[in-house]
Length: 256
Image (cartoon, rainbow, N blue to C red; front, side, top):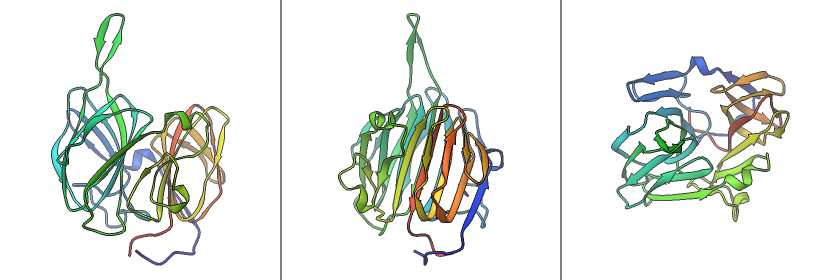
C-alpha cells in the first residue's frame, strides 16, 4: 500500500470514455484497464482495480475461469445471475443481494444469466445487468471464501448503506465482509430530489449505476459516469431522477 496522499482532486470520468468489450452475448464497460484494454495511466484508484458494468444476454455468461488473491464484489442492478464455484458454493444473485467472493489461493467460478419472468401467462427471459468490482486483499494466500447478504430493506432508507466492508466501523452491520481493513462499498437508491453526503477519505470512487444525479461542485452525472476523489469528500450527491449510486471509501492505495 502507498502512503496517504494529501493533494485534493476530483476527477470526473464519463461513461462514453470507458473501455468497452462487446461480443454477441456481452456488453461490458470497464472503468479501469481490463483484459485486452490496458492503459498504464488507468489501472486503479485507491485499492479498487476493477469496476465493470456488464450486461449479459439470457442463457449466456462467463464459463468457468480462475481468480487468485482478489476480493470480488458483485452487485446486480437488473435480472439474476447464477454463480457456481470450486468451493461448492452456488446460488442466484439478484438486485439487493450482495455477493463477495474471496479468490485467495485460487478459485474457479462461473457466472450465467439464468433469469426469467412470467408475464401474461408466458415466460420471458431478461437481460442481467450487474457491476463487478475487484479490490486487493490485505494479504495474499488467504483461504478462498464466499458470502452473500440481503441489503434490499436497508436501501429503502435512501441513505448510503454499507454493502461490503472490511472496516472495523462496520462490524455488526449487515454488510458482507471483505479482506481489506481499509475499504468499504456503499450503495444508495435515491428518489428524485433525495441527497446523500459522501464520506471523507483519502480515496473515494463514486459510480452512477443508474439514473442521473448532481454532484456538489462538479455538476450533472449520468448513468455510467464515475468520479475519483483524492484527499477529499463530504460533497452532496442529489438525484435528478430515480437513481442508484455505488461509493467506495478507501483509506489506503496501491504503490504507484
